[in-house]
Length: 145
Image 1 (cartoon, rainbow, N blue to C red):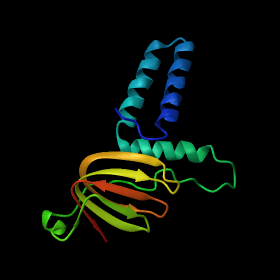
Image 2: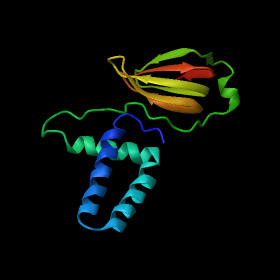
Image 3: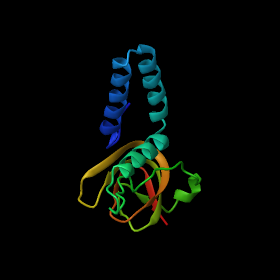
Image 4: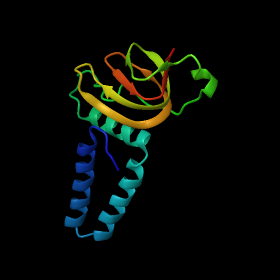
């Protein structure tokens, strides 16, 4: 399983919990915890929510929330005809709160500093592109609204 950015921290927390259970003398508890976390973290929306909650809980009181995942890929709700007048990739979208739709594209997500935040294999989908986010689409068709 390819883990997105921030996953190493979460994976380390799971490993630490399992190690503590082993030290406490319960091999079956550690195994149960590991299985539980694996299944929960395999669901990307659940995983991303857990990472956001962990990051939010480590903020100092009064500090602004940090947005690590400003783009959330969703299932495509449009039909094939919707893409008749769409742009052909490669295409770049600068985030300004607009909705973007794509068909058979690979995607690279960048933050405001130009660092790669996430990569998506060839897929169909849609999502809202927030400010300080840039998406590069390869292959396929792309349409903004």
